Length: 189
Length: 211
Image 1: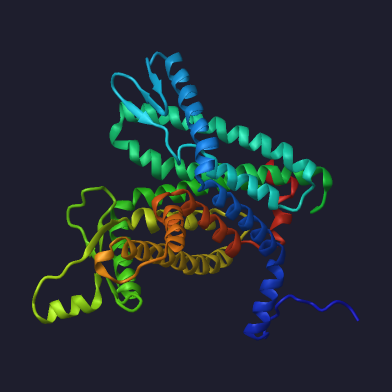
Image 2 (image 1 turned 90 degrees about the horizontal axis):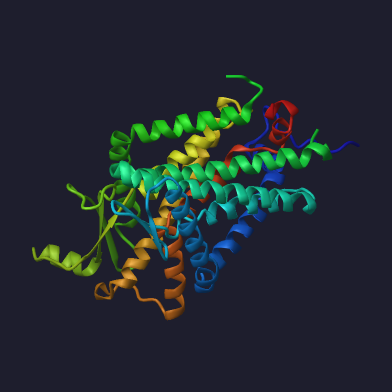
């Protein structure tokens, strides 16, 4: 006797259809479970004072210095003090949420949760993290310029645009990595 | 648009649909805010044993996008005061349906609608389940905020947490109410859950997908 066909057919009861739908989603549910557990772990660490002191603040200082350096290359005459970047006309403070750490965690968790060899995950995570960090630098510089030239748009760019752009970038990086990791393995082809 | 470039198509469609949500936000946010207030009233007017929560429109918000005021009161005290036609003490918190709902719904809607390989029928089913789960998320965010505010405003004498539970509430409030990151991460989970089936991966991995 062959394997029982789990696909729902016309005329099946709602219960059968639901069972077939869950069976069809099994790998997705498993992925989400691991993905969710990793994100949960990230947030459990992310919220601690230790993480703020040892990771966050140094990262934010680093971003502020680098963004200030880039702005000064274009002659904006900024001064960086702690997490503040300012010049004669505008001042911006690089704070939590401007660090891209959450989109990076989203991307890294998605890569780690995906069924692929660990050897392929590490270079993928390294490349994705480097890309997202670089884009974040562009975000900080662009927000400074927005505040300088179009202050009315600052909150809009900060909250509505850049936050979502980072989610989109994290997802695109993840899909590109899936494609790259499976290309040679031929697992799904 | 070239059918052989679904990832590029996804990005372009996503930007277009999300952009549409932002462009129409002056109207969309007003409608959504009304719905948010009525949703809040439905689920929180009578809160646990003693609490009552009202959601009132702010005519001239001090903070842009914070157009709703949550008014928390002790139900018993409130009812007595209303019967006696007297004022009663309440706690007031400005909330934003924009940041606590509209943007998340816009993100989820854009992700589902822009997903390649999937027909409109499946997208509509995914949207229906997605919107349902978004309601659960919005309810949970409000629940956390209401619990937190009742605990913080001790004079209302509705709820008071032990130090341990206060720390838990502080953490949940920080994650779900104060910061935006998790609010954008959860719709991604919902999107994957309601939209994809295992066979969709095969479509994604076809060589043409990234050409």
